[in-house]
Length: 118
Image (cartoon, rainbow, N blue to C red; front, side):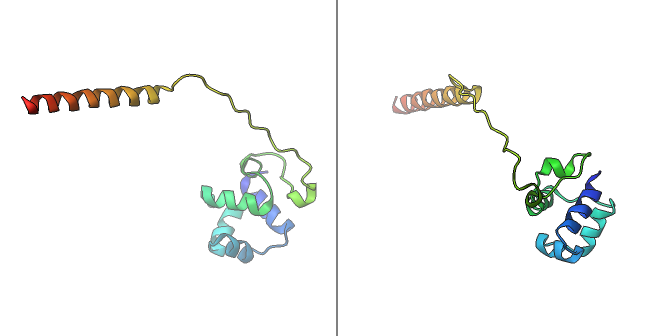
């Protein structure tokens, strides 16, 4: 199932007309029609709002394959993916560069002050 088919299926599952969906997304009904007939693709911000409205992830919405089910249908049973944070030790290259540039700037400023006083 492609994106246009998913938008149509999810919209009808929620019992929304094209006009009602368009109103919720602050777009024209013609835009929704074009999305559903694969004449155009929603912009990223609209895809995010569609996914939120339908209760699915953007990934489920845009990937080809099985049609997504609204969260109300699944009861929210799917576990949320866990994020893993890796603690880095030491400074990042951008931080090192910032320190070096700060020190060079201070040295140049002191050199200018020394030259100005002599």
